Image (cartoon, one colour):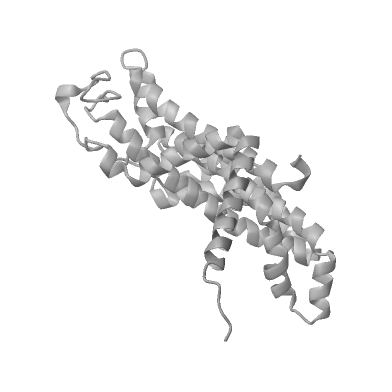
Length: 297
């Protein structure tokens, strides 16, 4: 009879876990700013997910008795001109910002990858048509194109996600096309063709996975831009409508009239926006250094 060593599998799993932890420690040691960015984003994600448990006041509840009340034990970050708790509105506003940022980034990446992969792999007149379309989209700055789309679609959560995702498409398409042009002539692609694999299957199964590293880096950077664009649209009244709490709308309601008499209405939403964008940028830079072999030491 053949005996099975039952202790071998747990030992192998422990060794794999130790290797993963050692690699994470190595990455964290080499990229401390990336760890800070990741920690900032974890805090915002935690606040968005558990907003119901870490807030005391309803972000939509109005109380005229505490209108423009400065930060205190009852209202940690003060109250706005309608008597709404600023802390609760910032915490719940994280849900809006992350939902719009992640949704628009995901949607922009899906369409951008489809256009870039098709353009780079097929080439010819297909590439020419797609690239002219990308040129048209990229001719306008991100915020300007988002303003045009938001004004056309109207203020709503879904419309805001679509309005911000469209300006992100050309940036993703350019990066994916550039990598696809390099990969389509690689030996492993020629080997796949030699065994009779279809062009569609080669593009999706072999070329696309090799473009994921730069795509992850780009998506992380675009997440910060999407959050900032949402705040800008809400500040201009074209983003998330009332009564949803939005950092940009909080600034637009308070910046002009209450910046001197109640500065906390401007400072704390501004800090939230700055930290969110700062965290995504730090995380994106660290991912670029880790995933790009040309930047490794």
